[in-house]
Image (cartoon, rainbow, N blue to C red):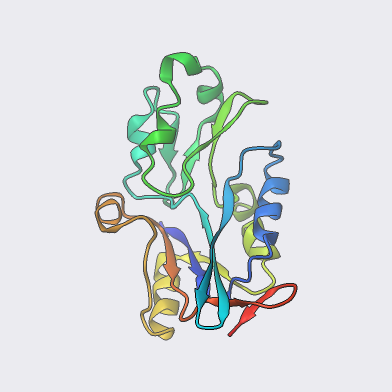
Length: 203
């Protein structure tokens, strides 16, 4: 069975947050939880200019997810395509005071599982599995105007990385990457963005 993943090209992101909004709408999230986030680095003074960089981040769908290992009731699983999923009924039926939402601090990456108080469940990016199952791409991919995010099989994404010069990293540090083996890959920006009067544009 083909394993799915995401490839995020930081060099293309201009911080519009369309992916973040699309994710919240697709998952009907209340104020607070964000399964997809666009981190902002800067402004940093480089010569006479202020520079910014934008980093779209979400669950990395680890091959060996520490969040799943930490869940005392086994509510976090991997499907046949390598997507990390939450069994919402099992999570909802678990006393959160008892389990201490152990999956959240177990994640070593920037966007751990998010607690939704309205549904009393923990949620995370599921690559929009409901869309994938009907032949559609994830909502964040569809609504990204700069084509920052690419969805595909790990084999397809690896080919794209090679075509772009093998500039690939994964967020979070060497040790977590080696242990967790994320399925979301990132291509770092060649250069940061410059703040203009109203929006960030490439230098």
